Image (tube, rainbow, N blue to C red):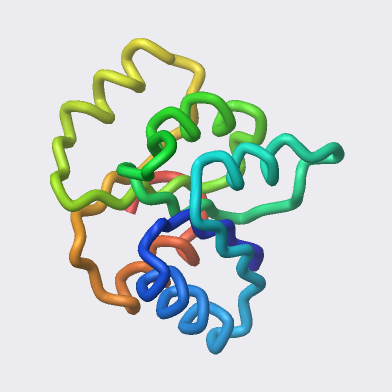
Length: 126
């Protein structure tokens, strides 16, 4: 499987990326919203199975990336990580953007096993 990991915390990004690669997945690990936008705007669009994205990035947020790019490839599973989860925020985003595919909002800290399970499960809700 191919994953995009967007996380500004270098230690967490490295830890998650290495864990997923040990599980024989391809991982593109990026540190910012700008890097993610550049990656997701490539043509043809990169083939991905899942995106794991921090909500609070120094130069943007994971919700903005989800809204902007998730509809382009509905089969890609989006898992959004945050230290201050408010499930109503994601519900509101989906209500105001009805064409978006499902996403999961997961509160940090979260185990590496849980992250892998969420990414590997495929589309839909966990």
